[in-house]
Image 1 (spheres, protein in one colour):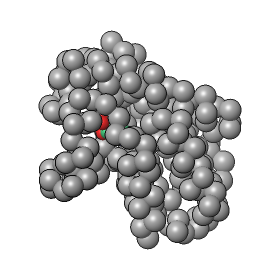
Image 2 (image 1 turned 45 degrees about the horizontal axis):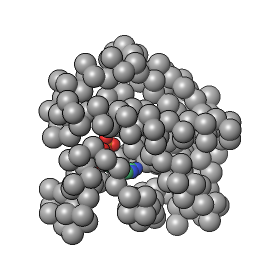
Image 3 (image 1 turned 120 degrees about the vertical axis):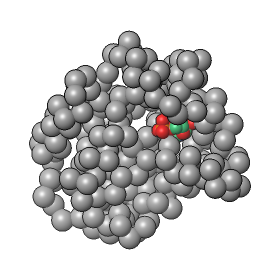
Image 4 (image 1 turned 30 degrees about the vertical axis):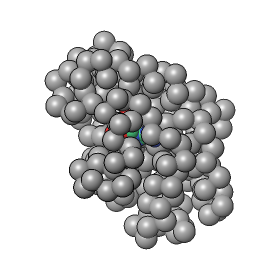
Length: 195
Ligand code: AMP
């Protein structure tokens, strides 16, 4: 399975992705986690992206593409992957599409987790991440609306978008996600190597 999870900050993508990846037996690729690891290890990549993350801004597309291409070429992606936090712009979505086509691979679907802004704000203010300060939260939500929401049309036009309600308990949302995933095309097709 090759699945993309899309949703605003606070929609529960991280938590749900972990459960889903375990249940589907595919790697969970969170670009936010990859970047945060680089920042804590103080690598040159980490140093170059730190300012973007701490201000809630998007890391440039070309940097993200290199990270994702490298990750998707790892052997564990041969069985598929769950992308959490990538793509986040239409440019990234096109780049991912080009990568997949070049490797003769197809996406099974993109799933949007919908949560009202009021609820996002409530959830994010009780989280303890450095980029969850109120002014940064507002910025990240605004960037999501401006840069990431156009992705929904990108995948809708390809008939690949599935929307689920992200309100309610983790279990309820997880169940809705599994139901959506079970209905995706090519559910049981064998997966080829990513690279
Ligand atoms: P996340 O954990 O997905 O909320 O990501 C945390 C931060 O990492 C974001 O606010 C961005 O600064 C950066 N980031 C993660 N994924 C991407 C991406 N696909 N494109 C650009 N920036 C990203």
